[in-house]
Amino acid sequence: MKKIIYAGVLIGIIFSMVQSSQAVNVCKVRHRTDEGIICLERGPCEPIDRFLLRAAKGCRLKAPGQLMPITRLAFVDLFSHLLRLDREFPQGWKDLTDEIRYKLEAKTLKEKGIEVFNDKAPAGSLTREELASVLQAATIKKDLGFSTGLPEQRFDLKNDGFVIYDLKLYVDEGRGFKLWERRKNLKESTAGSKDYTAKLDSYNNAMVTFGDNVNGKIPVIGSRLKLSYKIFGKKSKIVTECEVARLLSDPTLARSLKNVYNPSPILTKANFADLLIRVMGLGKELPRDSAHLDERDLYLLETRLLSRKGVNIFAGSRPEDLLKREELARFLYDSPVEDVLGLSNGKKNQAFELNNAGFVIYDLHVYVKENNGYEEWNKKDSFIESSSANKDYIVKLDAGNYGTIYFGSGKKGKIPIPNSPVKVRYRLYAPVTMLTEDDIICVLKGKPVSETYIPPAPPPEFPPPTDGFHDPATPY
Image (cartoon, rainbow, N blue to C red; front, side, top):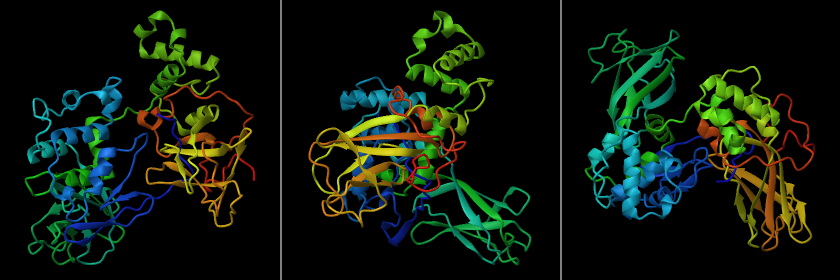
């Protein structure tokens, strides 16, 4: 897997699934892959999920995916990918037969607490009970926003027609979140009763309604509202590919499932030091008995070794201390990335994905080798002012903050000649949110590239870039 980056500044992602007819949702969002009625989003270090793409394309009205039952094998493949269990599988597992791969995945899922797939036929259809047993451990948590202070205000849970249960609603009127009571109706609620109702509309979407200060209390204006619930799935007995794709492509549910079944460890100083020792190939320089040392003694040995190699972010720390973004930024600055993305196909508007997620990038340079060596091309915000001879490129982000480099059409921006290698150099800052092992594992997959050119001065105390791809470390 390639090293990861995050290109640019934080991109706010607005996600809404708008119900336009009884069985059709329309994706109304930028920066996400719109496939049928599903907007797909990739998380940090996640490769493209081919099954999810295929299933999503089958989720259009009256398409086969709306009615086609999903097999246990297909579900286990998809669910294992969601939990990133592939990191725990032996090398070459993708070349196994369907039956052997299913047994491997079912065995690994059992170790995570999911036992329903053992000794089941992989080609058989996934049952509603099997899906429900997987989903029941996950709790969906949502922020509903703020109370307007108006009577009978309503909040759409946007549950996309899925059956939900174990609903709990909390209101913070200034003294912390308090659990309110759910009622079938508010007829018997008094003006001070902290009650609400939750009912379904004609599309099976849940709607929370508050009172009017006569029957049921109105949350005071500006009160924060949040809720939690569990999700069952559809009412139908058959579990379709489309339903599974819609469920598991929901970032909130996907994150909850992963946190339950395969959470990523918090990145402590000890964890990070151990990762660096492994990826930098320094294990052979530790004493033979180091595996038998306690955590503190091992941490002392590893950090002394890393200090001799120029990594000085561990001084005065304890193994249980959490790694700070500034400390990671210092290490990453001293480890610039250089990567050949591929060869030009000679076609217009070609793109090269950087395979990044969660990391800010600066000091970005793109080079193309057309004739006598690599030549740096120019980064632009658009091709509007580019001519056919201008060696320009632009960079865009998708929903998972994966950056893609685009070249011109031949009329607006030059097309790299066929078979020209495209190379990038850049520096990483840090993930947007800190920090678990999953946030950093991709960037440490390979040994950091050695310094091959004189670096520019680092950003002062590593502040997050605030101007897109106008790199703070690169003067213009």
